[in-house]
Figure 1 (spheres, rainbow, N blue to C red):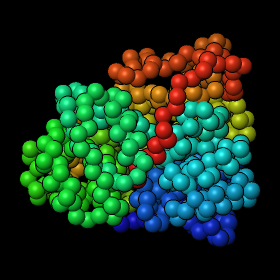
Figure 2 (cartoon, rainbow, N blue to C red):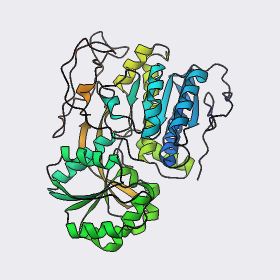
Figure 3 (cartoon, rainbow, N blue to C red):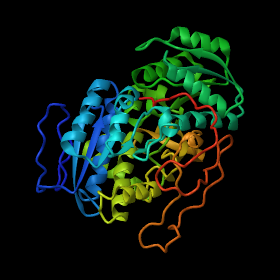
Figure 4 (cartoon, helix red, strand yellow):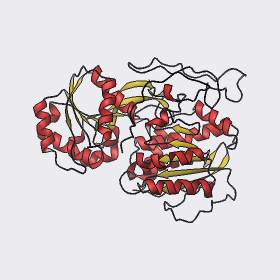
Length: 455
């Protein structure tokens, strides 16, 4: 399996060590655009971080290593899953690299530690993983864009699926952490049923006899599995062996059911539903090319993290093309990022006024492809054009400005806004005050608790 980072003209990668010497970019003495990627590349969470980096790398190869024909240098650093390291790396990137853009693919503690430092640097931050929930609300920033599908969208989509299937009573299994309570609260906002059993195994558990006995006794309509990584796989195997799988459906979150994880689950991982921001059989203009080239280069399947990394590079290229490659014109770059006019491999993508994405959320089923390999099959779109519930809490107010080449006062054609899914607010229509805070706003409703994207 190839893990090496790529090198090509006008693109260099810094070895993921906080003390590594700065690289010399091949063929470039003074690159126009500098992108830093801070990701978790070792320890827990490394799969998500590495896939995000490699997805970005694949898009850069497709773009010839340039944004809008401008030279690009990419610097990659590993936070090692440590908030202290993440903050130190962020400061180093700002002070030594003078970065234009920072792409982040780290866990919630690391992002919490460095996000203020990053946004105050006036570099644009594009986040591919967890973030404090307030970044979509009261502390939203004109320098911060959430590119990853927020975990709240995944949990609201689970509730939508339960409602569509008329399931009234469910059991939930998740880690003994606040994230489990936050997930349950989000599911309940979009589903009127009852959570009749909540099981919280200890961290790192490998046996789930007690949890399965309790679930069998509760006799729910479905089991929501919030466990990911090794815990998620171990529970799925034991759940199948217990015989419950055929009677009580298991519904998972995508981070526990990506294709690289399925072989270890054997047949226990087959025919299981999971909710995700992307599916390998989703038909998009660049989807097939991404899958073909990524698997050829790295020898492993594309995941949702890969898709998000790929989208990020495509978005940056589109923004720089819209500004004629002028990365220094920060207002123009921000307006171009807000338009999000790029071919997302996840389907519909655009930003709300809080810079949180409005995206689709999908239902997948694990199955086997024509060659007998474990894969995912798209079953339905659970939420179309999902919107963050915290839009009203964000003080930013802006309307889409026309792209260069369009008549003044008009915007380029965009798809019409679909109706919001049940229980979701429609996309707001704020007054025009480009980029910054309005003079006043009504008192907002209470904010939802912070929820980080599970890894």
